[in-house]
Structures are given as structure tokens and as C-alpha cells.
Image 1 (cartoon, rainbow, N blue to C red):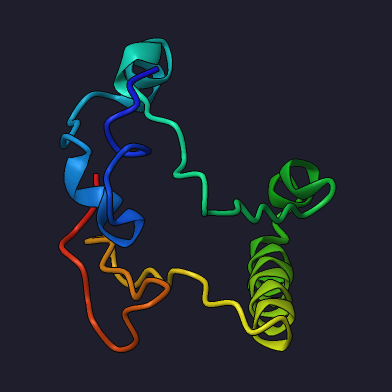
Image 2: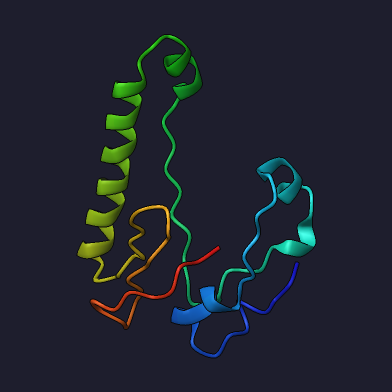
Length: 110
């Protein structure tokens, strides 16, 4: 893994160190050298909807989307109570409001 993004002095701008990749996801995932470590002062929050694949194949995509949205809102509420800011991504461009930079939109990330 590359360490450029993780070694960026200002971790709120680490996305600027990441190159844009236009590869298909299947190819990208096979090329470990294209990834970078998360900055040491970041935490990764992951949410998952149990049995979502089965639910989607049964036509329950609206319910899966509702539960997925709720899990993200729950994670944001927990972070707010802990007085921690979480990057907020909107649209497909990936603009982010990052810790220490309230209201400032960073450039799109890859």
C-alpha cells in the first residue's frame, strides 16, 4: 500500500494526495498498490444491513435503502454526541466537510 495520503501533514486534506482512478472496480480491487493507509488520526465507520442481498433479490430495495440510511444517521448521531466530526459526502463528486474545517468543501476525492 502507498502511504502518501496517510503521511500528508494535514490529514484533513489527505484526499488531495490520492490519484484519480478510472479503472473498473474489479480491477482496482486487485491492485493493492493503488490504495493508501487511512491517516492515523482518522477512524473508519462501517455500517451494514444484514441479509441485504437476499432482501434486494426479493424486491425489498426501498426497505434496504431506508435501513441503510438509518444506520448512517445513527453513526452521525453517535459521532455528534462524542463531539467528533465525520466527513460528509454529497453527490458523486465526493466533496467532504472534514474535521477542523467546518463548512469548507474539499476538492473531490477519488
